[in-house]
Image 1 (cartoon, rainbow, N blue to C red):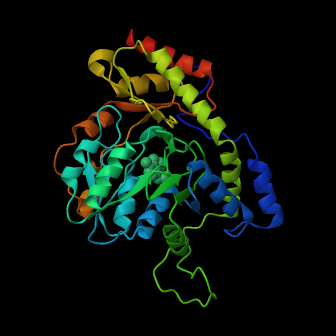
Image 2: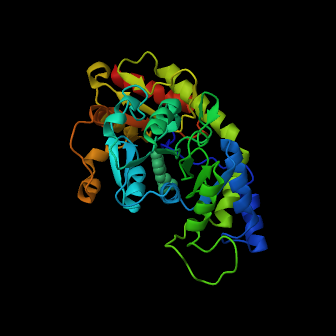
Image 3: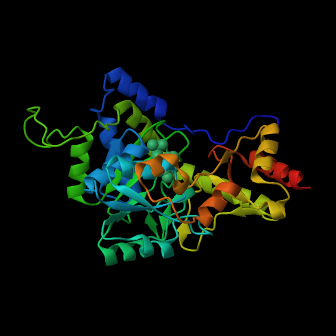
Length: 374
Ligand SMILES: Cc1ncc(COP(=O)(O)O)c(C=O)c1O
């Protein structure tokens, strides 16, 4: 490619500068200020939820969600083995233990058929992670949760505006955590939010997020519980509000780009995409592919190196939780086989995925992938 194409970059085409300038000019730069509230309301509404609580990143959004849900020491929480490390770390912060379930071979999300065998008397919650913008089968997750009296907390960090049977991510569980990191479809640079329809959980989220200052009554600086400072600043929320205003546009761009990749690579043997089953609307946060070397003729690492020589940036996919030294040290059960996760790690990579890519960029990348095979 004649120009360098990064694996991702933010798209900031709306009112970001206007709102940030307003926050600076009016002096409202901390977590007090109208943009935090407006961003919370607009984003919660976008998800089809009543309440949103903005925080400083997606990792603490998950932690705060777990705290508000009452998860703590002695508890177990089921998570997918194939996920970003933050899903597991957030559980560890509470003192609870993450318990891993292998990935589904086609959707790459948690393998629902393997959840029940991991449930014990200590299990309190399931965290389905909507990977790369594709929601999990939430009816099946909810059925299992109901049967065993468990909470469901969506890790929707990668799935803003994704849909499952007409329901938006964030709205099909007790509560859900989002990330607004710079590479996400809606971004604030660093940022996160927890959304819920439950007023009681909403109040707990607000309480623990702000060092357990009482929600009502005078500020007497007596704190009944150990809380956190997870507040988002008004400056950051100003960017967030501008992003939500454009959310549907960005979603359209991501989905369009994913369709182009699938179209231009459909005849390349050994290149495999995540299955998007009927009834699911993926927001295609990242264009992840697997490279089956026996059919493609080169490994994923060889393809990445070739693309790099040609100015195209890529990234490898996650390494499974069962392989994480940190989680082993923490005391997680890392024994057993996670065949699908290991395959995804061995064969998977992200192709450039910024929403602002154009068709000729994608066509050029796909041409390189084809040329390398021949
Ligand atoms: C699935 C998942 N969960 C949680 C997070 C954590 O979000 P953050 O990076 O904003 O802390 C990420 C971030 O990439 C993620 O992909």
